[in-house]
Image (cartoon, rainbow, N blue to C red):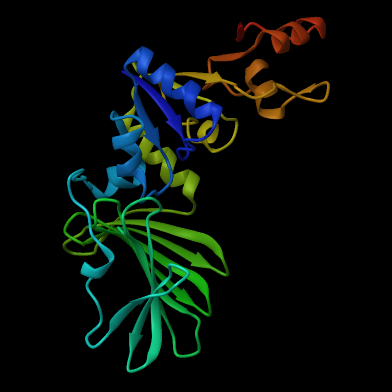
Length: 282
């Protein structure tokens, strides 16, 4: 099977337009790596054959015909909502603002997230919603810093947790949604993504990437045939970019081919570099 791998969809970029066209031409499935409540909207509006790593773990499915308007969001008992002139929706209880709500852009007031505040005005928690109106995650804060993010399945059960310490992620756990028992644990995002990607792609699969960052790193443990399509310049000044040079020198063996612009290929040849793993496109 053919795959296009990307950290998150940046639908306004030329990179995505090129990657989307490859996906169409090769009947590929697009895999996105980072959590994204917008995912169902992109799947509907940009490209239908897509999956997300977090949704893969939580086994979340989407209903493209469902939605949740801001006035239908479950509220704390006794709380009321008020639309302000600036478009912010305040949540008021006993005359005190205890939270606020945001809606998805250009969505006819579909709820995106709800933030609740502590008595001192700092964030207590945020409920994130997907575009189809179901809870995507609960984000917990302490002194305005993220402490934990819980990702849920369609039944609202927690399946995946991200933990933070002093602003840095330090643990990821996959948990049984019924018993809450820890099934898998990882020290960081890359470890987690590598492990999940290994479960999805196999030796007979072709995986394409367009970036030299996270997308490259998570391929390390795969057995698939992996190709880098570099849309940006291959050079920093007169020097080939670090990770690309490692691919060319076969120090990164899990990417078998790099595709660059014609002028970059010519410059590599002029510099006498090894281009056995490189080809160009006009």
